[in-house]
Image (cartoon, rainbow, N blue to C red; front, side, top):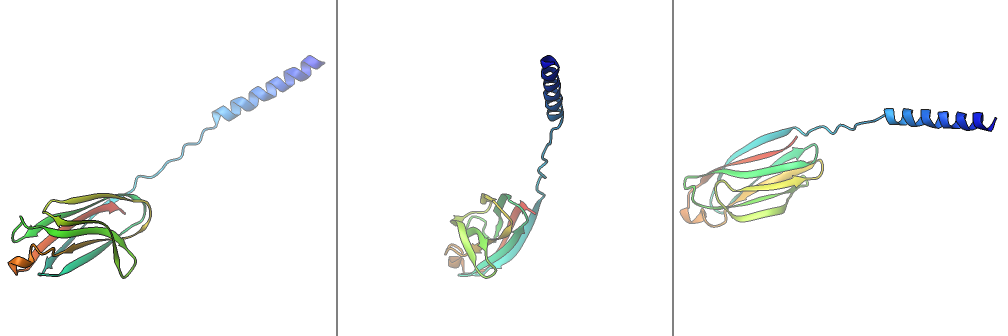
Amino acid sequence: MFRRIARGFALAALAALITACGSTTTTVVPTPVIVSETFIGTLIPASAGTFTFNTLTGGAVIASVTAIGPDNTKTVGFSLGSFNGAVCTIILDNGAAAQGFAFNASTSSIGTYCVRIYDNGSTTADNVPYTFTITVSHPQ
């Protein structure tokens, strides 16, 4: 009788083990959709421009000064930060960003972020407006 009870427990344990092993759950994390936004404008001497973008998830952000003109050898100030609805709080800044410069950053959550371009004095000396193009790639 003891053998029957022991055998019953062993079979029940084996059945539970087989059931547990056969049930696996795989969590699928969606890949964020990356979008690119382009901001084009004119930087007059001693001025600045701020542009905002939104992310719906965390992920990589690449903000770059794509073009500066009429003299693409000049530098400008370029910043990346968070935006609270009124103020761009600077997180990364390059006071002498040349054409082609890029920030490679990462956001950890949903939010509104900003890029800022400003005359660092380099373009003031020319006393002419400078056109610019900024490109930002970020998770949607």
